[in-house]
Image (cartoon, rainbow, N blue to C red; front, top):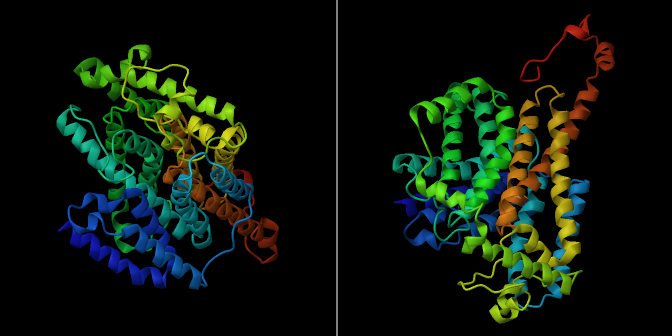
Length: 461
């Protein structure tokens, strides 16, 4: 039944995308992030869902009139330079099969470049934000319920056969969208925007309450992944989210009652897993990470400018281990176990510098949006989502220190959103300037006599 339902949804999306190409961007991210075909059991599991959505969207994009030129910003320039450098390092990679992964990465970059051309205006931006958030909040809701119902006795895993499979990838994905889930709940509950749908207008507060529940269930699901990298990422973003929350005294009181009075504790298996962070010398997995970091560092020293290229581990264990500082008695998984050492080993010190510049540039862009959008009438949603993406990216950078997710499609979705939101901020400032007090007075619009007493409400009005 799931297969037939998904097939009907995909086929039904085709004419919609042809008429409204921007919907194809939403569908593209939905398929790429949620991987709905991985939840089926029959023919749709191997059905080329992503290929169909991508092909239809690109065709509609090429024939569309309703699109914008490529945004001109420092962030877009960094993105183009990063892609160019990755292409150069692939051309000189030690493994001839590096081009296979380059093609995979370019598919991710294609939507990153196309999205800003079709996504503009509050309606489309909010829709894309909700699709990206909801695609992964689904697993947070599902995983949280599973963890609560089983008392955390079993590990929360991503769907088999997708990029979210296992516990580490689903863990970092949920960390990245956790702040956005909170903001989405507030968007509905506080009605920051006027929804075009009567259903959404009527039940927005109820949807907001449901969003708050999903937020807490997702936090539980992250812990239940038993991923140490996910735990560190959650600890990195928790203070920022706590400071952003209201009713802090109530939250602290409930925590004291739960842990001090009732005696709620984490499952023994979970605490044992976390305790290995302190005793890493005795943990095989931790020592593999340290060995892998040394391997990629030495690879970069051997070829400091361009690194070894994609899929350098495909050269085999004998080639890989020659760069190690020590060799352990364990079964090897030839992975960098870190976004930073992955980029360093693949693209050299220049590549790592470009990658870090791209991350810092995205954080700075989001921070500027967060600050300036709050001063624009009706743009509280833009400011809040910029904060959410900023904190989610910090979680990625913290957890990614221990996970090989440098080419994570969700990361580049965040970058695309930052570019789109930058342009929206600039256009909002231009519109505000066109209705400045002097202009309004010239057009006979009444002005407040005592401006220092005029305040905006939470919706910026």
